Every structure is written in C-alpha cells, then in structure tokens.
Image (cartoon, rainbow, N blue to C red):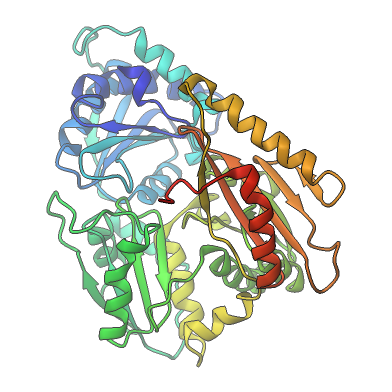
Length: 476
C-alpha cells in the first residue's frame, strides 16, 4: 500500500484506502529519521526539530496527528504550526532554522485525496531523487504504529505575525487603490488572505469561497478553465482591477485581467521578470521551458540572464538556488523568489503583481499585452496507444524518437525535458516555430506545447505533428 502513495515530488492518494493514519505514522517516523540525518550536514539551528502543518481537508487533523506521533517515535522534536498554506511552512523552516517540515495536504486534488509535502533544511524540496525514495524504504521496514515509543517533544507555535511581515515585505503599494476579486477555492487562501492582506489601505478585497468548510464549491485547481469561471465573472460583476484564484493549499494562483481574461503564467512571468530586474539589475531569471519566446525576449531586453528549467518545483527551486536567480516562473502557477528562500509562494506572487498594478495608471490587460506576441497551442495531451501498461514508456520513447528523426535537419533540438525542437530563428521574421513534447510520469500520455511567429505557421506545424502524435486524449 505504501508503494502506491509515494509520487515523484510528494506523497499523495485517496483517503482512507491508501493514505490513512497508519501510513501517516510510518511516513512520519521514516521522514524523522531521514531529516535528522540530513540536518547533521546543514547549518540548521534546530537539527532535531521538524515542523508540521496541515490544510483544511476534513481528514488532515487526524493524519497530521498520526504524522506527528511517527516523527516523535523517530526521536524527533516537533513544532505544530497548525492550519496554514503550504508556503507558510517554507518560511517557518527558514525562520526557525529547523531540520525540515511536512505539510499535510493534497494541494489541488478533490476532497477525497490527501498526502504530505516534505521539505528538508532551508525548505529544499524532498522528491524521489532527493530523499523520498529513501523515506519510502524506511517506511516499508517499520512495524505498526505504537511499536516504537514516542520520545520527541511536541510544542505548538503561532508564526502568523512573522509570516505576514515577511509577505508584505514584497508588497510596495503606489498611489492607486486596487479592488481585487479573490476566489479562495474553499482552501487555505481562506485563512491566509485575511491574515496577511486584510486592513491594507490601498487594497479592497472582494472575497469568494473563503469558507473553510471541509468541502469544495468547485475543485481547487485553477489550471482547469471551468474552475476559473467564478473569478472571471466576479471581476466583471464587481468591476475589479484584478482577479485571483488560489489552489487548495494556496501555494499557487492564477490571475485574470479586469475583463475576466485569464493571464497565462508565462506572460505573467515576463511581467514579473521585468519588475524584479528593475530591483536587481542583471540578475538571473528562471523560466519553465514550455514558456512563450516572449519570456526569454523580455528577460534579455531588460538586461537579465534567462535560464530554461525542467518542469516541476523540485527542478525550478534547485536551478534558482544554483544560479542565485532573483525570480522564477512556471506555467502551473508556481512562482519562485530568491528572497523567499528560493521557494514558491502564491501570496508573494499576488503581492508583487498588486505592487506593479498600484504603481501604474494602466489596467493589467495593457501591462500584459506586450507579451502576447505569438500564437500558442496551449498544452495538448496525446494518448499513446499501447496494449499493456508496462509498454507505455517504450511507446512514448518511440514517438519522441520519430519526432527527433523527422526534424533532425530542420531545427535545433535538446532533451532538457522530453524533447524540444526549435526552428524559431531559421525562417526569419516569418515562419519561425518551436515545440516541446514531454512524457507523463504516471499516464500513457505525451504533452505537447507549441508556438509560432504567426497563426498559419502554428496551424501548419500542428498538422505536421498529427500523424506522429495521433488524436488528442480528450478528442471524441
């Protein structure tokens, strides 16, 4: 059963059949042993202390309690931070100097899911290649809950005042007062936004779905267009300057302009890159390799150093830290900040955009418009036909090899994440294009993102790719 709940970046599955209190105890005990060892090689002030927090799901309190008992059984001292957004624990790990932290959450998944996000010293993410596989092996070797006595100490701590001060350090309002429509998705933004952003003179917040009720009015995943409709409609109804929709654990947000149009996260990355480069000239900016070419152009135009990253928060954070970059943006709605310990924060992303907008006399749509230069396909999933699940990886690789061969002479290629084939500069002002195809880690799917300098070229490119990729997975 434990085998099924460990994923590439976290621990997540349905409750109680897979993720349950017994599993939580084993995860806690295993993570405690691993994090204590990890902390011996760090500058952590509290080398024997792990922080625990949780989201608003109805089973999160009991899972967090069992997780804590497992940590204490590993001889680890625990600080219980209570109910908070995931980015809160990244702050707290660094603020207190602990050995790491674990958030009980299933992020944007439906209410029947739950799980754990584990961070090490300095809030560095623990993924399959950075310790999660080791934690799984330890967990699988453990006996039943209670088989090891709990010797670690347990305390509670309230850091909301300190967290608010940290987040508002990124909020630099101008003279313009903003009206912002925010959909908290019945998630942790329902607690975080009032704690951090209430009572600000230059901001009026119109709230929706702020109730933490143990259920969701809509799925807390703003990447699904259907879930953005309340934000789009609310912005127009209330004549707001900006719309914000947070995911379940509030570490991500997707924005709309004043007309209710969803702002692409790559275009928002370009806007924020310009903003942070004004504050830290010539700095490095990290961006998701699926992003529009306008992102790279914006970074270089403003004197920054652009670095493409693999998809995923583990890779984005590692590259931002490695390059000492000031900011990074990902298409999923994760935004990363050097001055936030190289970690992501939905609250800081919102604070930064609000700062930009409040200093401008233009609407957000006009600020984004310069980056809407090139037509994009959006991410399209293609199902790889295969008779047996174990043959899926081989089938995916066969498609990637076919693409590589087809465009061997026509375009530049790299394998940073999947395959990127780039003929952007080979056809002058007209006809330039690029695309990336990545394999899903968990499904027999290939994910395509494509862009061209003009619509006819994009249409022609998608037509060329169809015989190789087949029908989109959601096509009927």
